[in-house]
Image (cartoon, rainbow, N blue to C red; front, side, top):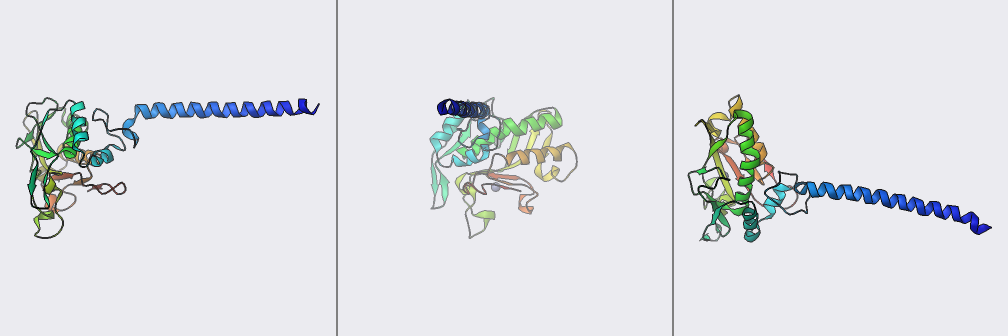
Length: 250
Ligand SMILES: [Zn+2]
């Protein structure tokens, strides 16, 4: 008789366990499905330039660091046409061995002016995503047309921060930075950081949108809001500050 009494209790426990397991499995499947659909929002999913910009895209771009083969594979998979630049060394602090330049005539890449801009690969990968996911959508939103040219002030430059004679070397000293001065639209109209940042209207709104979007892709974004040294350009770089406090956006 005692055995018969215990049996319903055990059945209930087993049933409870099964239901708990089923709920857990259901939640795990839901989570797995979400992760599959949002690799850009999960820290461990590999970076893919065809994905939209997510929570971890910027960190993953910075984490490319000196892994030139991995960075090149990303560009290859995205169908970007580029040329790897010959390694360069200038003294102990300057030079690069992971720089690329986008090939002229690649329909996927809006041309930079002056042409033949070479940057470290993680900067280039972020520039490609920035064009696709930030700059062109912002131009469509504000002007109903595309950007046809991006004006820059260069990448590689063997110098210290702010051109001082002492102190830390700039990210420019390893081509890990680029300075963006303005944009040309399909109708020929020019938008510049120097001329349009402080104005009201669509041009200024566009420039703020492309600055804010860059903050999701680059470790460092310095705009005219930061200081007078940046009144005429956006400084974008991929300085590696480690996992926490990984970015500066000003
Ligand atoms: Zn700069």
